[in-house]
Length: 135
Image (cartoon, rainbow, N blue to C red; front, side, top):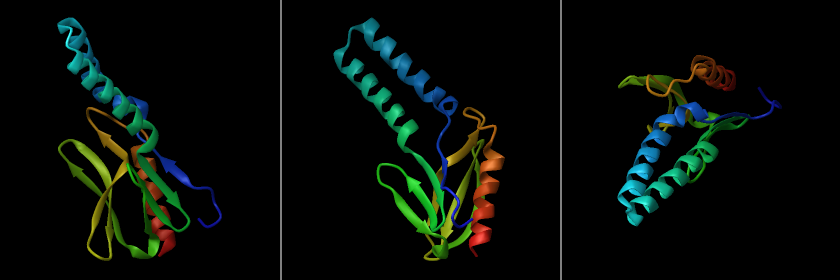
């Protein structure tokens, strides 16, 4: 674990397809209706999807897990009490429980029927192995 390169998990582009479809429908509707405000909303939606794809994710480092989002937060391995899988509403994700009781659902990896990640199990297992090795 120590000395190895960081492992970065991001949403796969195929997982953003549902978001892209919704934004595309809004954009087409806005263009048909010639509604400038709705076009602006659709463009903002496209920018948000692009931001999610490039910025959101999880980095597994030697010293802990970094949750990437609008801001980034390092959760040191020493502050992690448990790492588990959360299954709900047709989706799965990895949850980190900190010693202070805070629970954080990682932004990646995620798996869902509507936005599947075929490598989810491998990614989840990698995080679990790194956490176990840090204990």
